[in-house]
Image 1 (cartoon, helix red, strand yellow):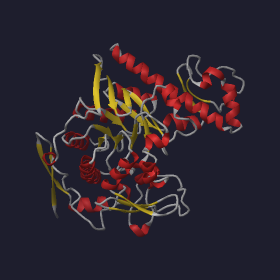
Image 2 (cartoon, rainbow, N blue to C red):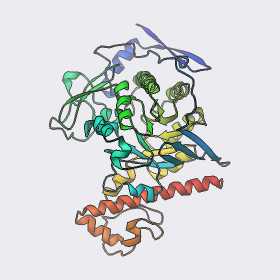
Image 3 (tube, rainbow, N blue to C red):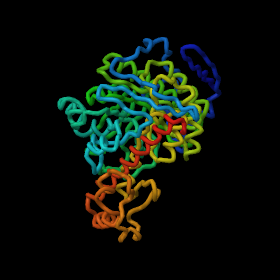
Length: 445
């Protein structure tokens, strides 16, 4: 039997909790249902080792190239209108962030975002690191130049994609992390080779070559990419794992994020870094994570990990977290983009959201509309409906074409169908966020 004493320090508060984790921890964390195996390979440290104290970091100082401006706080709710200032222009909040996985929107040009009044775009470090390589992007002058986009960009750490791959190679004794579709790589599975305190070793789904992603290498890659906002490496635990395993993951994420932040502070390069709050739907762990990360000199905060099984659970968790995060810094909800959830989170004070939901749905024939609701253009009833999806929408589909035409293009598998539908859904999200901002300014949201 052994007891792990978990202590969490912030700038002004200390809390001590004792856990008897001997037999319970060993059986729980080796159970495949929990999603993680214990760190069996060096370097090994006690999984409940606390992250560095905030006193070991420099105090936060406002940046002349990055800041959050609060424009209006609603009197009806916690919703707020703000503006994030970045080297490549402002980001109006609350705002939706379109995802361009490989540095490009699928089936649509970047100019669509400007016309849809969407300021910020998300790109994935993992995919860009594998192809064409962060070094190539750096040689091109950075991601903005490489893409030809003189607007704000945010990149993630690469961790989400790595952990989403799962690992089914029994020889490495790493359990499956998350259900996933069949890999593009010919070997199929076993892409994660090792997870330990150093980071994650994995195989490329493209050619099978081996990479090591650490807090330091993730930041280095994002420095080469040059996005305005970058994210520290964190661990992605699945929904429903036991509390002890989740706590282990939260502490590892805190240690990794602290290492990422130290690396970032050595060479800022006019970039802002957001800390990522974890803890699943466990209130105590979310509070612990939000409190600790708020004590560190991050420029903003993202809420990540498992956000719940539905909007109700998401709102319950987010309501508690946003009360802890500092009001003078921006916050971002990772992976949320369905209109119902976005509207609910805005009323709690959430600033920005990213998701593939609008663009992915468009490619599957699903349109978001104000008057018709969410519709599937593949339905036979649209074959002879010679009306636009939305009369008031300024997108190319609604201005120049009908649902019958889009129905035809989709059935004919014409790529133009994806382009028109994607542009429409992005216009819908941009219009929805604009209406929310205007509603907040009138104290109606």
